Image (tube, rainbow, N blue to C red):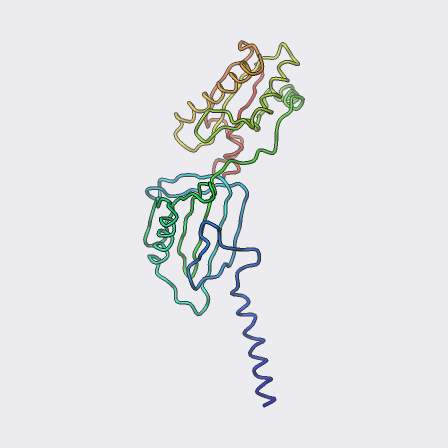
Length: 276
């Protein structure tokens, strides 16, 4: 009897770590947009970034839509004793979940993945579910703008203009694909006005820049329109004489970082001041 008890305790000591290894990773939970996962899976890993981007297939693998916002990746792994579902079963489950939430399915590959978008708590949420060998990868982007943390001040702008002849202003924000200046840009534009008022002889080129997403022609038009919008804000809202300013759109032709990653694309979308 004593030997049997010792054997049982030994078996428990061996099996408990294996069972514990198949629990959700600490700190990981299902995303609110998909609160119920497929049976037989646990969360092996998760990652969240306050602001990043993901390219979603919208019609075919070569036509993608880049969506920016709060970025989440959840990796589901099968329990060892679970029966693996087919790729079609995974795709259909997530496809139906998107539809049930009143969302739109954008692209389906029944051999591997699906993606779609829906509205959750007033936010536009994009998602891609992808089937792997014993795994499901779920990518989610809650569409939104980056919180701008670095804002220029007149003194710093002036110093860079004196030393380099140009300076990037990252506190001026626009909606994606538009030239309407966002209200949170007021501080940065106010600092440019302060710089110009402090030096009556200063004249500036206001230069718009974009990333490489989209066609060259559309980016040139967009960058020109954004530069013009900043010029008009300085003239109409701060009383700067228009003859001291000239707007120019440079599109994607002067990147300061690689456009291969969102971090670089964010740096490339900017307004620069160039001393005339």
